[in-house]
Length: 200
Image (tube, rainbow, N blue to C red; front, side, top):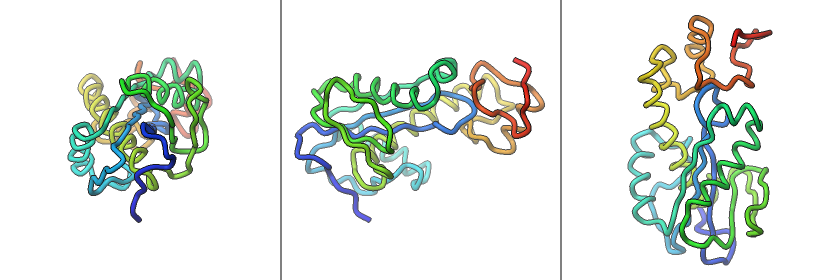
């Protein structure tokens, strides 16, 4: 399926998406991207459908060719305070804040968003596999978050975040059971399947 360049007729349409919403540890990370109307970047797609090496390759192409982009992390302590949905939307807003070009329309992956600075927007289910700017945002969010998880892996290698990126794998949950939780874990999440209470 060929991705569409734009949803609206606005010149500076911005696509936004997040990564890490379902993780047990680490931030939720959002990115926002404005692509040129004549963008023809080969291989743009939902980041989940791409290999790690392809995402890295496309990351540099997106940053070199886009009109503007922004990336923002919301950390676990804030996720626990405001909930993951609000944190995801806040991360999107903050990533749009970082774009220096004046955004005049926003397309959002998914079905939840809060209006941003009175700019018109459209939520699009599976937008990252339909529109180039959302796909580009999904790639930047994913690669940026992966770099962050690789960094904090060095501090807590027993959880193997470099590999599992904080997702609820059997290995990650086994490590939580054995070693407990860290400052990077989301305490409001169900960290263990049989969790009644967790010593924090």
